[in-house]
Image 1 (cartoon, helix red, strand yellow):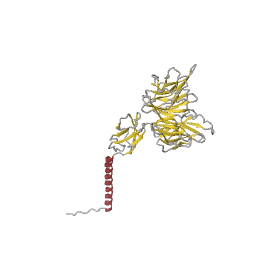
Image 2: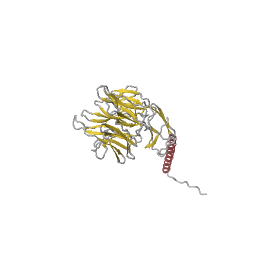
Image 3: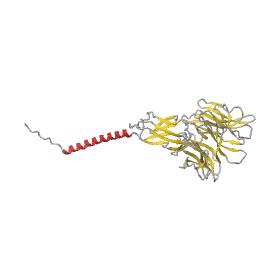
Length: 459
């Protein structure tokens, strides 16, 4: 029997093999552990808007859930809101967005829940439902208040309470616009040289900052695009100290980046009193040279021309299908201003004011599209304009006020369609203009601020 001969091995090679094997095994175990922990932890939520437990939230709030990973946008999200809210759901990168179709109810606590089961692109699941609450605020109003130093400053008032002045600038605030989410106000602040710059302030009075230095020009009448990221404003050159500013031209401004460019390819094209359609596709404005209201499609470049010599801006219907505008009519023995409705899809223009030669103005359609509010003055009478209602086809016109010694300014609908906001003043008195509310159903009036102009609902 031949004895077995031991096989000689390289001990260093064996130890290396052992280290490599141990490393591979450790990596596999670690990977398995991470997969197991990932399955147990699930995808993480980074941000909720509005935040959980937030109060004083705008009735125009949009709900957003931002995840820590890119999500599979083709997965249908189960969103439950109590009280129920109709709306549209969409993805913006990692953020799930719910946009209500109508304004939220004021002073209401909403509970939002996103169902479990959503998946990230890495395969991590949302293991537990996401649930949070927030409370909407009472209706509030922004306006220009006559301050103690006789300047005009931005103020906010809740009906029945004292106003809160949120700017204390060295010069007048000329005009302003509230952002679609109700969190910011873009405004024009005059300068010592007679020009004006664009500024931005939170509706809580915080984070006041200059948006655009318009040295050599006056930048005014900002109007927010519905996306809340851009504004259109009027730019007028200041030719000399004390001289009136030049003609207006429309410019874009990116609120975040500060970039500004002319709206039209011909940067010398004149325009003022811009207004966006609710869907953001159209920009209407007054063309002073052509004496028209022009609607410009921002996507196709299509232009819709409407003769209008009154200088009033047009008002959009909530569905962006119609424009309401005014036009002057010269009759043999009198003068009148008439309200028309224009349909963009068909170019049809319909007269709404009837045959009596009233002086009508500033039509605005209710949120549900059922009623058109406007102001009206009777022909050949030394009286103030009154607030009227009619259907958008011109039928059932009726007055809401009949105080001939009081002039009523342009009305604005509340989000729930229950009240109209406006400014008024006595024709024969030297008193200050005041801000009022009018309940459409009951006719009840409420004064909410004295010494103020240009009231706007804070959404």
